[in-house]
Length: 429
Image (cartoon, rainbow, N blue to C red; front, top):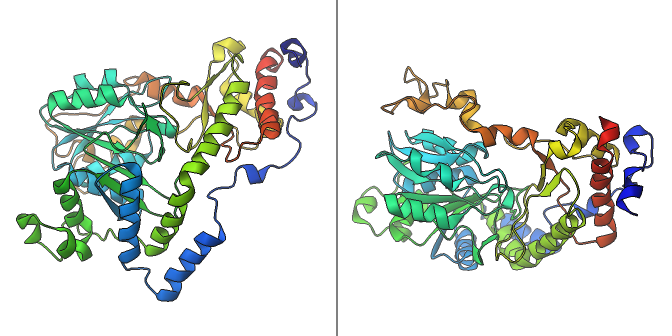
């Protein structure tokens, strides 16, 4: 069908036939759980070793080897892993951490728990990751770390970020929760900063149930993280004399043990993960190749031949260019796409954190002032209009299918639905 023919198709929104008539749930189901995963979990249950450490240690060792770091430490969720990573990076009362506004709250909130504060940076409008050009002017003598979040699977510009961090002698704490297995110029994300942390919860690309993990090459950072929440492993892992003197009680007052049911599943998932995300990348790149040149739509992906990849392509999105479609509101575009048989085409992603009341007026710990500025010597809050690209995201990105298998005939149907609506934008207006 030519573009001219497509422009005259009757939209399902106007009573025409749907582009996608059948249910393709098998294309989207995740994680892939096999009898091997089930048996690994059953073995832990029958042994009664859910709260043990042996299987978790094996998983940590294999995960560290897979990602390319010296050490890995498991946690019950990604938020706890990030909290321990920030603590290991030295974030304490009054310190500042530069974080993208466009991210999930767990990339930022642990900083407040440690008495630090957030300085939000804008995102790049194409990658949706933190914009390196908006980082350096935000650095002060209180800045302790930068948090590159590989958002929706797209790797950050780690060359630029690491150059800035080295120049100012501040830590880089990578949040890899959206991008396990993704590459930046041929090297796995999570291996650039001094420390990295990530979620492994059920909806993530690397999913083991409800868990998190941090990775580092720095032994001192590992031991500091262990001392914070992994008290049961102090004797085995701590060599620092100061930290050893506090053995037996977690300095963070919380238990950071990964459940071994998750660790057991992680060992199985790790065996097949590279092949599975390679299949996802083939499918998603096929989808975007089919939409190349479509008005109003841009792919959110790494450039072909760059050596960078989207990993498991977590929470796939597209970029919307309303002016190419006569100014058609993104909400109306998505509604018409849903009518073509896609139930999950919605605009937007996360809410810009710098505008959320928790980061502006919430007194979380009863200090008599907003927690964001409780231990700061200046008001760091950022009003509406201060980070324009982050604030524009809800109006310029939309959900696309997150294919887990590369089935050309079906993927063509989904791509056709988006193209059909884009070509008929004038009739929607």
